[in-house]
Length: 71
Image 1 (cartoon, rainbow, N blue to C red):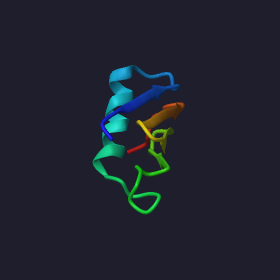
Image 2 (spheres, helix red, strand yellow; image 1 turned 180 degrees about the horizontal axis):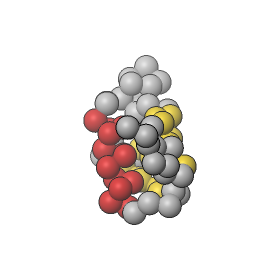
Image 3 (cartoon, rainbow, N blue to C red; image 1 turned 90 degrees about the vertical axis):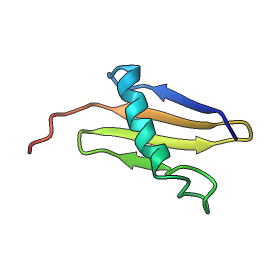
């Protein structure tokens, strides 16, 4: 499979959405017995990445509202 669709539904730039997607892809295919990226990845700042797979592509949907994280 060689197609990855990044669907940004959060109030962030596409460049930022790609950074979140890169984290998910970087972890590898760890869900569905190694067939797809992590179903749901949540980040400390409130952003959530939902991954799915079909015959021709992977899809990562970025949602949530980014909040400032206290150090």
